[in-house]
Image 1 (tube, each protein chain N blue to C red):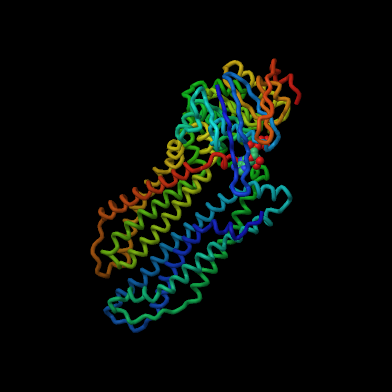
Image 2: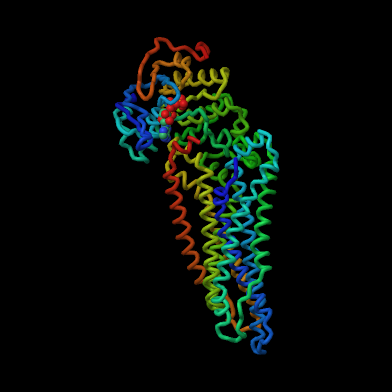
Length: 374
Length: 230
Ligand SMILES: Nc1ncnc2c1ncn2[C@@H]1O[C@H](COP(=O)(O)OP(=O)(O)OP(=O)(O)O)[C@@H](O)[C@H]1O
Ligand SMILES: [Mg+2]
């Protein structure tokens, strides 16, 4: 098997998250670096200046770290899926005598998904920067700020992440390839065996549990996508009162992109990973509804938990940020925004259920024969 | 009784269009053991899939006691499969994340059959009911697949090369078990194979050649799985 560019394309989810991360970090860090160079700040603007300085770092830090972590989780998730799906080919390579490293080495290509994402995010940030600077200083309190290009940002936000991710991919593959050839070749899953405490009970109940257990990362990802949606949408809804509208929009966009990317990816993987099971159930005479309810529906509670956690998280985060950075600037006191919660919840329920419905249709279209033929 | 009339099936389109079944007529009585023989690519699996309602024919009709299933909607077909048929495949297709017991219950629960433990015992796997498929040998996996199919009390059992991946000893065991179940519980078995010897176990042998039935033979006496050659 030669891992090619086409495989790297499958990692587009990572690219999208990396675009967001690179965009936000470039924008705010560049701003930070540029205003740091300002000297002639009028006295009355100093609190605002300080607030901008720390806010730039905080936003870049929080969203950057969050997004970077997300991309690492996604990378591991994708790689694990990839290795599971291509276990046979990898096993055969190993059986033929290819060394672990000579196979793992080829996984560097997945660093390209990070490179492309980071480059796009970086570029778009610079395109948007003039507008951003103008909006930031709309009331003209600070002196005029010129957009400067900082090479070190290119290094830290594009080159470095690419290298780190390429290395990570190779290392992870190297680690996974430790498995004996037979385990790679067979459909055996380590965690199947680990989850040995399967209880007595009807098939459908067991199926729900086994579906969840077989890919725990998916549970996390689906909860995470709801978390992103809930926290970012609510934050952006409460923001216009607190900070600027640009932020609100930016956070909203990032939240939606993150939530949708992870959700779509996870559900696709659920359907793909369970295609054989679904096909077999369909052959035996289980209806579509039962299949999608047991398999897709198994994740629903976790999505709602993710939503709840996101609500609490954004509340605490906003409270902290306002307390820390804007204590000496005039902003209205922040209390929990129930309206935002209701709107976000409503939007979430509608969208989540709609997407589930779409995937249920996908299950309906699975052709029995093509699934079995593999 | 199952009656297939003038079944035609095409695959591909344009220049690649190929007639895989060229007007198949076939009658299978209740409680009959039918073996469909034919070379690789002759259309055996396709015919089996169409007879069992997994795939649709392009023309022709399939009657189960006067009910034509070719006009069924997807959900009607699902209901039909749930009530009437069981499947056994060459590749077993067990659900890898579930234990033997849960795999068998997949069939049993459909029919509200609480005696799944007996079925597992009957295929000689009571000791392994908590094992996962990847911990079983090929023959054991096929026995689970058989238990799964029988646990749902099908009226007709469709088997596509059930012993294709097994050695002689295991293959004979499986066939012996299937043929006994068929006799004792009076289900209809339609089995596809390219092993000519297995045909001696059947009531009726249907020979297929490039999409046509070329011979239908009735055996006066059925041989057991241990009497046939291999
Ligand atoms: N989905 C499909 N698309 C196109 N052609 C198909 C498809 N399925 C089967 N065929 C073709 O139909 C013909 C009959 O296939 P079928 O699987 O029924 O053969 P078979 O008799 O079961 O063979 P074997 O003993 O090898 O399993 C073959 O020539 C095959 O290439
Ligand atoms: Mg076949």
